Length: 192
Ligand code: ADP
Image 1: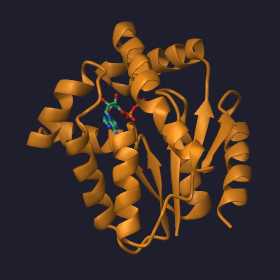
Image 2: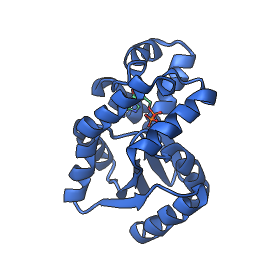
Image 3: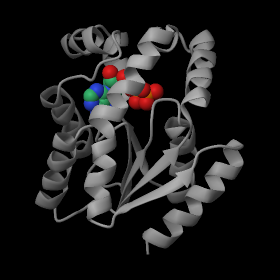
Image 4: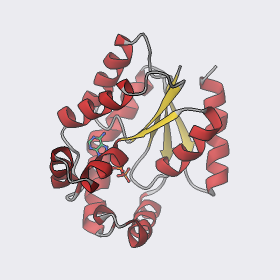
């Protein structure tokens, strides 16, 4: 089983690349952001709770996020592997993921981090906000808060897997096709 964490700041292209990678490697894409948006769209209790954090550019509490992720994995027992996009976003989530996969005799194959400079992230997110209908993409102060939260809460997840020699960096600048090629090279190395 291949279990990849596609990692990087908001706007680094994780969702775009994940949808290409699932076709190439026949994996299941789990985006916690997409799962929350689905719940918010249906105005479920989980969606309402998530919205109160997402609209401010804050993280949804780990207890909520981890449970939702586990349910999604458990609902898909027969897939050849997963691409986790937007999860784990805290070290606590990373530890929970490792423990959860371990309980199934599985493990994270690698974390692949897309690096993109801040100016480019802000302009990509504002551009996406014009068409995505996502309130968290339309306001520069919310975007900046998301980038701050990424730096303080989420970058330690890179260090956590890096210490285990499981983290790889990929340059996230360039065309979608160029970045996809770079990612495939890394995946072909780690997923043997
Ligand atoms: P982006 O990567 O562009 O920020 P996502 O769609 O991955 O977008 O996430 C949107 C929002 O959903 C995040 O800003 C956060 O509030 C919430 N969210 C997504 N994944 C997680 C997670 N693993 N833990 C906590 N909150 C999350």
